[in-house]
Length: 353
Image (cartoon, rainbow, N blue to C red; front, side, top):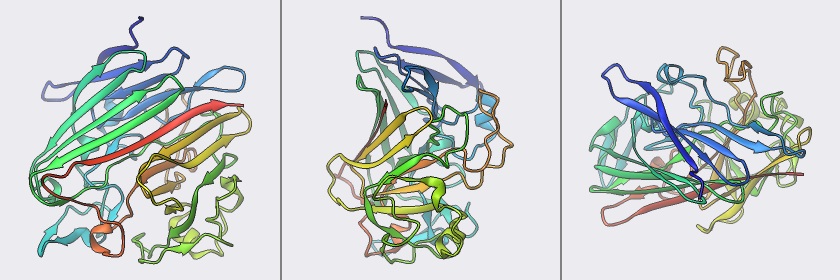
């Protein structure tokens, strides 16, 4: 069997440690590039309707670009995806204060979250090549309790799906909400994502306050710009500023709650790009997904293609539990206790028609 994983040095830290770039390939010709620095998805190719493979994930040209700090272009997000209000929470009567990095709030695990860590990497070659990444987060890191042992496995399947499996254990009660922050553009970086047709299998979403913290309400999507139960162009209602939530998010930057609340692997969303025929199906075990439409990209970053990453040049489908769950008892719990194993799976499957 042909080797389906290539490993090379991606770059060197100032202290001499090396980060590696892993290229996974399947028999269909799909290719995924990953680095063990932050677990970033650096590139991911998918075929169009004529069989042409193009990169469909926003990424940066060099390791140095990633070290500068990026707008989360494809890393593992942890310990807690999304926002925690006022950067604090109480668990079992104990108050914890987290790092602030989103105004007065905490977002995406803090300024030195999992996206800034060098993970231990184990390539797993085979017909469905995989990369297993492991990191142990010490007790108190970024303010979180518990020593947390995390494993994230990326697998490139035969059916052109990129599967991400998350697993973690802790030695103290803690909170955990892992995700990946890839920005997708199914045009192959030819244009923005406003013509992408999106379906989200959700009948409710979480309105937020001006700081983008959920108010606690689960609001029906019916009759709002947040109704993607039928495939709809992202650009159709994204600028409808008569809707307060569109104004607050500068577009879409909200959490949708799936109609199916189960933890089975279920279809959560589909994306279709009509000019190329590319289609992406997103399956997840999580109860919700944050759609973010790159409202704050400003053209200062460029990808390998030399194309500036301007506003709304990508879309994120961050599968997760609800933002600010540690402070909102009515939301599904994100507490992980000793003796329990956190497990979560998300799968992005590509095809064309």
